[in-house]
Amino acid sequence: MKTLFFIFLCSPIYLLGQLGNGSAAPEKGIFALPSVIEYKLNGGQIGTRTLKITNKLSETKQFKLYLGDWERDSLGKHRYYAPGTKPFSCSDWIKLEKDFVEVKPGETVPVVVTIVVPNDAESMKQMKWGMLFVEMINEMQMPKIDTTQKSIINQLFRLGIHIYHTPLTGMKKEVKLEKFEEVAITPDSSVYRVVSSNEGDIQVRCKSTLEITNLSTGAKMKLVPQEFPIFPKQKRVSTFVLPVGIPKGRYSFLVLVDAGEDLPLEAAQKEFEIK
Image (cartoon, rainbow, N blue to C red; front, side, top):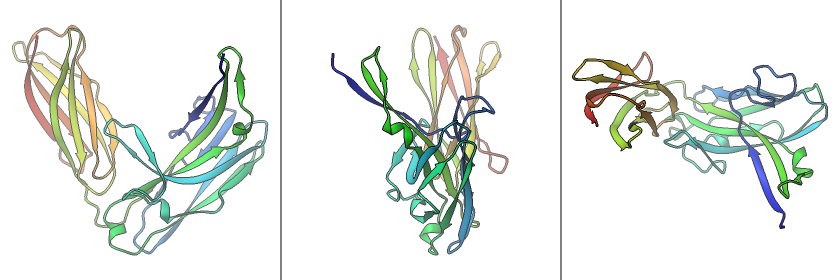
């Protein structure tokens, strides 16, 4: 039997900024904190933040640090690109104190992350963002052999640190509900899609809700809200699936997109028949 080669990429872990056992406060693992680095500066200014890489394992680990561009697609999946290749990128503005670190057991190594903001109008039009990757290189040298599957598995562990820069002034915040439609009906379920777009200059966190009302009985039902962030000039799709067993009939559907207290609610209302 032929031996198969796989690369498993555990990347990135955003919320905790760690490689560990997945619990809220694991005793062992690799930690890179903070998981989000934010700068709020005007053109021509310089800002610094410190990333701390902690090793709570029993052996020394080595890491390489590098930058990249990224975005979320309309379904919220992350897409990655070479640094400095996207118009929203701030990767070229970032300077790392070091691009290689060795961290001994129980040790925390700081890395200074500096941003140098260009002093031009284009750079100040909207927020910019990028990703700082912290990649463990030890595991790449010694593949694990899975004798059952006849495969060699190279484990590559990588953390992704979000980097955001938001200009201090002149940033518009605006979200629009672009579309609300029925996209699929099967004997078992009905699916409805909401498309929201960020027309502003900064990232916005939204919550999309759907309430349906039976036009014959007046009975109401609220579906589980969908919460999501949207980058400037990008779109996000929320999908709602009606529970099985809803009585047949005509219903009024009210969808709301809430982008925070400082913006008005976006709303759409339509009637649909559930057969």
